[in-house]
Length: 464
Image 1: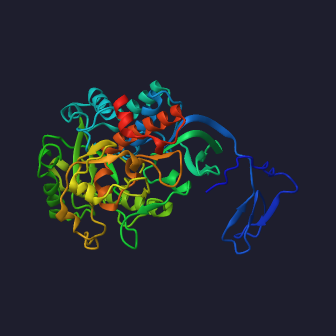
Image 2 (image 1 turned 90 degrees about the vertical axis):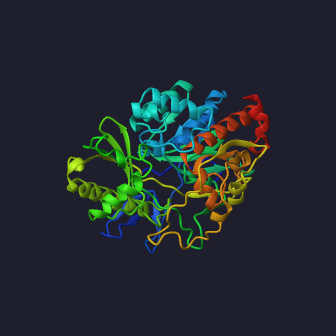
Image 3 (image 1 turned 120 degrees about the vertical axis):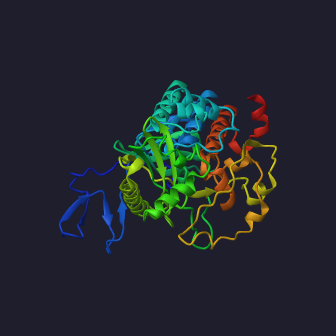
């Protein structure tokens, strides 16, 4: 956690004769620097420096994925000034940079989710129309999300990564720090919403969190998605997820009969428009969502596997003879990162019993979906949750409010819940709904000059 003071001393100029010096451990050359290398060469102590404040807003949203866009739109439409920060070069997160192409648990949602589905269908293909916008074109999604945010007055900063949080003496978050091509910068706001997916902002702020399951904190696997072309939708119709109920096992059978062994045993082919399809057929096991090297290695493995699988399908000939990859995802799909501790934790019992809560922000209906945690399946997981069943359940507003830090809300898959419940509410239909709630609550708390945890969602819902 960064010091609450933003009044850092001026950085020593690189050409200042008094600047610190250290030896390059590889060459022995003396380097002029703004820090000092430890004697064992394992760490570097940076000199203090002045960080420019480049933005001030009522609400700052970290992460421009489905939850973050909804949070930013809801806050701006409620009258707040909003800053949206996103590390990728587009809005949409897993919808766009991740090439997901399918929105789950969306049909029972109102508000911004329905607005987006309508836009994706109206501006998309016949497939998008037939699926009420739940199967969408990532390029259409990029444009729609940008246009809506700009129209609402949301200030957008892409290519910018969160690297720190600043708290005052009352443990209220007051600023965040970022790095980008513009250097290190500070952003002030009255309220913050963590829509990073992995709970990055909350972790930087010192919030407690849970990860995965068991002593090893094992998380659900990651998946690389790709866009394909070169096949006729009519010729491969039995293998398309939306047009054939047995498509996934049939596609797996085709692969295995031709010597292809995908790491994900439920390969999914989806038709988007014209001759463009998406394919998910990869699992990367045991990868931490906040270990950059592990994610890098998983990305390289996954991209290689996707190309190998497409090459294998093409070698079958016939309908697959001209199969080719148009694009692989910029960002590997992450199912699970940090689950931030909130003022309520959604549990497996809530899912089993169909929780009804007086502060419900939305109703989740997607089933429990624990992907295999390794090649041996889920033998390491207590399977008793299966006997409890699943009922549509409420996600309560307090699960969106950080327990340890004031002025901070969470939305999307980093909200407060246990491992099994998370496997249900992590999908993007719920991310949009919880993002909308968090953004609106952030704006209202600013307007009323109270902390988010002092709001009661039942009262807010009545005013909508």
